[in-house]
Length: 162
Image (cartoon, helix red, strand yellow):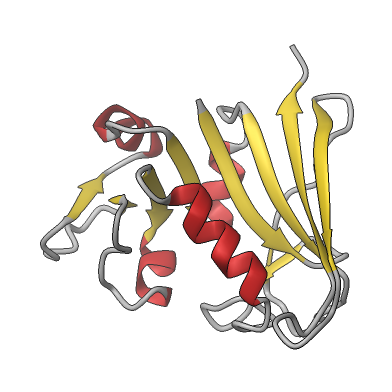
């Protein structure tokens, strides 16, 4: 199973200056990301790898799609998304960025989307529209704005319609 895990605002914005448009303001979303991806293979592009500090995320098999090897111990490099899939030994989570998401959308079985209740007009990277003919919502969990989360958000899981 290939799962895309992504956080976006109400306009599908996912990135700004190689970071999330809202920064690290959603502690419960970051905790969910860690919980969901621990013990899995995570596939990301080079810019996303740089945004996490150019080091492997712990307790995960880290695979970077890039024409240039990272040279970082504990990080596998794949020249294409297809070769990244073949390297993966655990359940696959595609974690970004924009070009990787766009390419992986055709292959994904499931989407785990954090829908942030806010707009970030400075964003420069966007997630493709989720086509309701291709995807069915199967679960939704609401998180309110509080001391852990600067914005309210929903974590929504979609499965591909057969």
